[in-house]
Image (cartoon, rainbow, N blue to C red):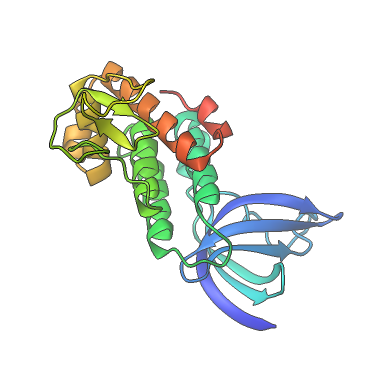
Length: 240
């Protein structure tokens, strides 16, 4: 077996046997990996809280055929502040779930790793409204995965906007000639907010009102779940 060391964010865990746990993590250089942490569920486990969801760790694994084996893990950042805040915690949970859905095992994804670490740091620091951090993360994560929404020109014919229609299956805003049945007509401020979040313009995003944020969040949720081909269960817990 090959021994390797990397930094990773724990996405989720599941029980294995009486004392072990399978830890799914997104690593910087090796992509998403699943590894067994032996004895982690014992009261006197040497792992402590180092292999729990959200925790950013420096980890050493043995690479196996199906599951790796964790041999060492040291905390880089526990993101502890967000654990005691419902809004930040639930937004972070949705980020972990989306990351798990958008990544493949052992496929390196440095951009997704950096995006997740940056998003969790922002949530932990309380720099912005949690729902805005989540929406920004989802839009950028989808863009990294090849599903960036068209916001400035028609997603079908590429005619320059602004356009009044938004069609999730089409891939974003669409012109009057191209809009399919089921298209919606969001307000211009909501579309502008999507653009600000996608481009990291927090000056423009932080100044929006609650109604605009809710409308934009609805579009982001619909767009994310369409391209993930399933519902994100944790989104139902997020306060928007």
